[in-house]
Image (cartoon, rainbow, N blue to C red; front, side, top):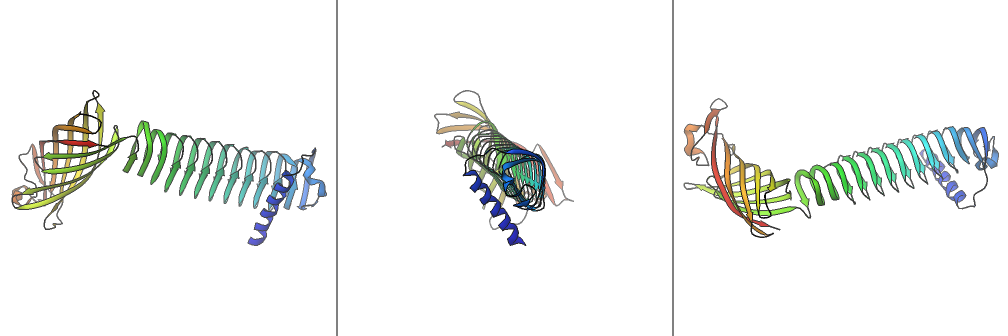
Length: 390
């Protein structure tokens, strides 16, 4: 049965391409037609020469156009323009423009442009530009500009500019400028500029005005808005290595990547407490405001895990809010300094300070917690260093 269905769809497509290669002929209108399997029907072999208001194809029909309603058990094929509603068990296949509603069990195919709502069990395909909505179990494809909604279980592809919404279980691809939102389970890829929103594990666009929210975000440039994710790469954005010192962690290196309004921070550090050595690694976000061409002010928030030597499974977390005044000598070199709010969480009580990895200089607030299984210490310190921008 599956082989028969595929053959019927292939036959319909071949009929379309064969007919479209011929010179256009004048078509007449008829109120209704019934076909069993083309050319077995009320319009016979001349069925492609008639536009029908009502069309019923028990198995497979080929007609010259539709102004009204068409119902097919398997496949509806129209060689002329369609205005109305098509419902088919397997496929609606149209050689010219199709406007209205198309519903099928497998696929809706329009060789030309379309202004329609297309719902298919597997796929919707439009060869030209389209307006409306495409809803499919697997994929939607438009080979031109599109205004509307694409929703698919696996993938949406638009080969032109798009204004509207793409929602897919796996991926959205738009090969042009995009205004609206792309939401997917894995990837959103836009080869042009984006004005709006991308939500997925991987997001990519050229010039962005809006928000990228995902695990990995890439953009050529952000005019307005921010990327928010674990890894943010903006080609013409903000990138820097910061080398810094503080009273808690003596040597720190931070990689910052994103845009001035919001960047991701990856941190590593080294320090000692008496004869003990320890390392830190952390993750954070930051934002920077331009005061002048040379002076900037930045706020960085980070969480840093402290690794004792030898390894100790106890919780040791230093959470920091660093407010710094930055001065850039040029586009590549700068210095910074400022106060830091430190919140130290340790699985040691305050009475066991000699067991903690950090030598807390003093506290503004200190308290034991977890039934005296750990403690919190808060103090204000300082940090400063050198910034290398690239």
